[in-house]
Amino acid sequence: MPERMKYTMRDVARLAGVSTSTVSAVINENVVVSPDRKKRVLDAMVALDYHPDEVARSLKTGKTNVIGVVIPDITNSFYPEVIRGVEEAAQQAGYGVLLCDSNEDPQNEATHLATLSARRVDGVLLACCANSTGFDAMIRRRFPIVFVDRIPPGTTGNSVSSDNVEAGHASGKHLIALGHERIAMLIGNLEMSPHRDRLEGFRKAMQESNLPIREEYLAGGGVQIEDGKAAGRRLLSLSHPPTAIVASNNKLLMGLWESIDEHKIKVPSELSVVGFDDQLWNRYVSPSLTVVAQATSEMGRRAFELLCQLIDNGSNESDARHVQLRTEFRARNSTAVPATAHKLKR
Image (cartoon, rainbow, N blue to C red; front, side):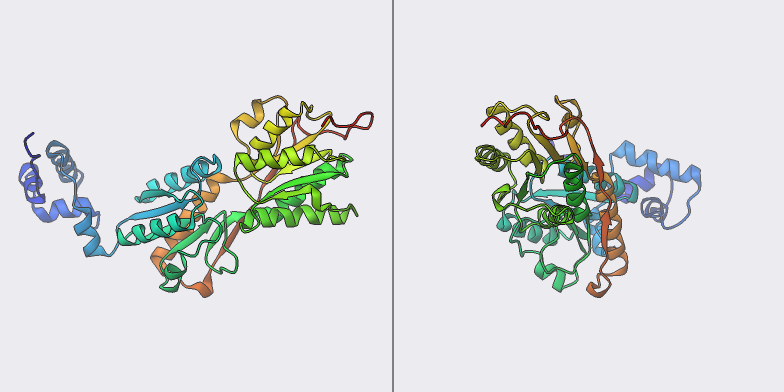
């Protein structure tokens, strides 16, 4: 197969009938060029399939106009929606995005961060996994980094997340208002800030109503479907099972739903269920699911905008910003007043 012809800026200038400085001005958009000349340059670039050498440009400007995004689980539908917000904002600003999935592994996360740094990205958006520390060195050297959704314990860096304490509080208050007292929660991994904060809000709601928080009703540890299924099985097999359950993320909710089906329990007449994240299937499953909806796309957009500010103005930990986005509680058909005439089937 013949080697592809590599054209230069000089070839573009010759075909367009302009100087190389005019071609440079069109590419870099740093000098005003007449519409006629600009069109001739752009037409010549298309005809020759010419693309500027981004590596050479980055060495000259000190910027690559590329950011990295590291997420913990691409199969969790929450993160693709966040990434969509990042991509839309990045495209408008002329940035490219490199996406990495750590698969909830701190070592993978550290490797991805090192690779992105070596590729000279201008900054990183990070949704970290539990017990990760790979970002510490980047923060020490003031590399632009914004934490998204998950904020590591003790970290004072820039972040964008939901108001998870209020979200947990809203879920508990909704169920209490319906008359539930035996309320359980699939709390996920408390090393992760969203689950820790949602539990705090849930506890607050229970305490405000003088309701006991039963330790056997708090099931945690993992964030995957299998974790939700195992926790659901345990809760529904108790001698006095809960009349309502809150699942702290969408994967735990899916596992819980499977365990409910196994136990032949009817929702909401025998058990009320509240989930997190409003996915398309939440509205069309029967019964439709009551959920706490997060502003996923806005989270991605705001995180990118904050990262751009750090890239342009420098990263200073003392001026770190922490953006919290409001959530929306959406009551549907999976929650109702608790059953009083019969017990849950176990």
